[in-house]
Image 1 (cartoon, rainbow, N blue to C red):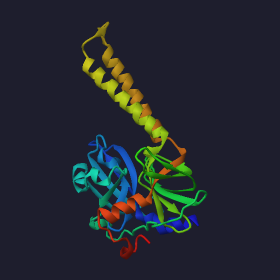
Image 2 (cartoon, one colour):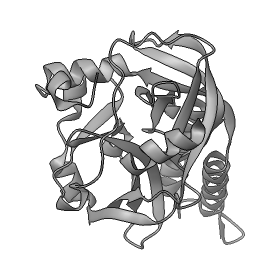
Image 3 (cartoon, rainbow, N blue to C red):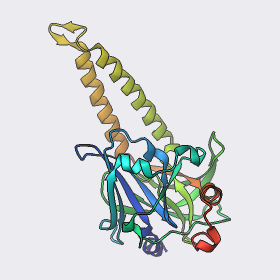
Image 4 (cartoon, helix red, strand yellow):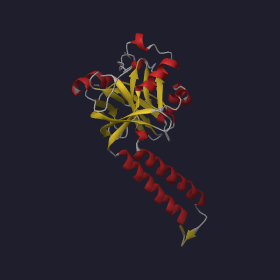
Amino acid sequence: MYTKIWQKSCRSVCAIEFYSHSNVKVMSISGFKIGNQIVTDDMIYHVKDAENIEIRFLSEDGSTNYASAKLTYTQFLGLLPSQSEFDKLGICIIPCDFPEFENVPSLTLCKNCDIKIGRSIAVIGYQFEHRNMALKPGIISSYYTNSKGLGFIQYDGTVKPGNSGAPLIDTETGRVIGVVMNKEMAFVKSYKELMEITDANLKVLKEQEGKSSFVDVDMAQVMYANQSQIKRILKEFFLNATVRVGFALEIEHVLEYLETKLEFDLDSSGCCD
């Protein structure tokens, strides 16, 4: 069952990688092709220190590129619709007019699916610490509605940084029933809060550099170095974390956007039955 899901779907899932000016990878997420668009997480709008990006679709071995495109982050942002167009869904739909992606197959969205707790699912997504795509099995364990009123599918399965934007696939039909959104997990929210506190501390300490010293030691500079080390440790911990519960935005929210905002003909396109 899972072998068939992988063979049918893996070539439609991509890695979206963000690199700094010195070519250090600062972030990566997953995405998947629907019609002539790529669906992914809206975190792509605000990637700190990003200079260039690469979108890679991988072959069945999960690691070899068969279609890829590179562009600057500024060029990439220029292609995107306004973030406000997505009504705070937490997703982004990238126009996929790259000639390199012309032969990339589309996944199928599940329209009017009756998905029950206990149903078997699969996630095909990218992993930050490696350059490979992976399939993770799991089951639907519950449903969840966030503070914005958006419905999420809670699933039990391995969740890694880089999986955001990946498709949640119903193994019985092979169709996409959700978009993985790691930002809904508690440890992601805690990580963001800690990073915000650390960044605030660094800003204050930077402003105090050179204003006080103890035996010719700039204490603000020492504390700045300490906070920088803490920030690095937090980032490494987050990037290597593995949890067993994930959340995926119910695909009906994406369908509503495709139908009303993009005038996407779901029935005649053959991608969403």
